[in-house]
Amino acid sequence: MTGGAPAVSATDITAALRVRYPSPQWATAFEVADRTGGARRRVDCVALNCFESRGLEVHGVEIKVHRSDWLRELRNPAKGDESAQRYCDRWWVAAPRGVVQDGELPAGWGLLEFASGKLRAQVQAAPLPAAPPDRAFMAAFVRRVGGPGADELRVLLNREYLRAKREFDARVVAETRRFDKDAEEIRANSERLQALFGLNLHWLNEPEAAEIAQFVRAARAMGSEGRRAFLLTARGKVQSVLDHLDEAIAVSPAALDRRE
Image (cartoon, rainbow, N blue to C red; front, side):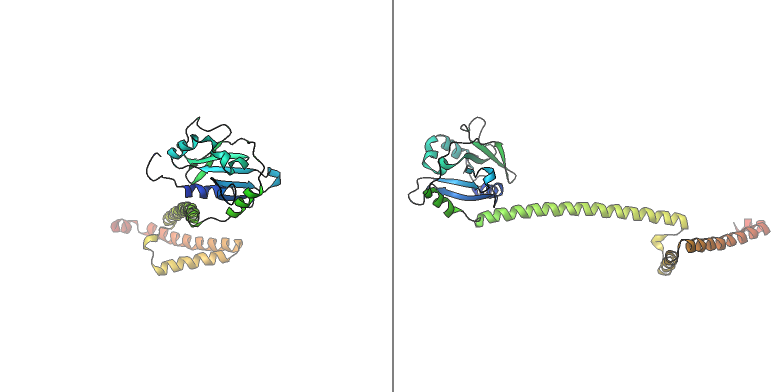
């Protein structure tokens, strides 16, 4: 990213830093000076850990979206002595992938690489010999602590929209697959019924469908013994019809042959 508008903006990284340093564990401020009046330089992000069990560490982050900005930072190593960086227990550079090359980080600095809307620690920041915060710095820090601005809110809302859309799309795919599976099972059952009863369910008219439904409801309403008796009776009637057909065939085979 050596020229032109960066693919990643400082606002994108600022929104990601709020996610990395969430409240109430962290108090996070942006564009923090080392005092409230006459400050020479500002730090892009200062995050104060509010949990005593975590050491109440102060993290500082410098945001770089252009490689040229990063190289200019390297040419001014004394910059940190003139800013709130001297109060930070750990110091990070947050940048898109490719801005900071291997071997360029000063000793002890960490690298937060921005990609796909998230920050990942590619190089861990080491503890630094920080100066004790004075009242002038704390006043400047507290004054800058606050919620996200309009640009950050747009980034955060867009991120949540994309996350919700991905979840919704995944649910639609899963439900579609489930419905397709159910439809396939229904089709297979339909084919089995057609083969078993000799019915063409695609051409089944309304009276026939109602009669079958009535038969099924009647069978379900009975207990197991009642259903068995019901089915045995139905089988007996079918068998009676078959017996009559056998008798007719036996009495007049020649007539049957002529009909065929």
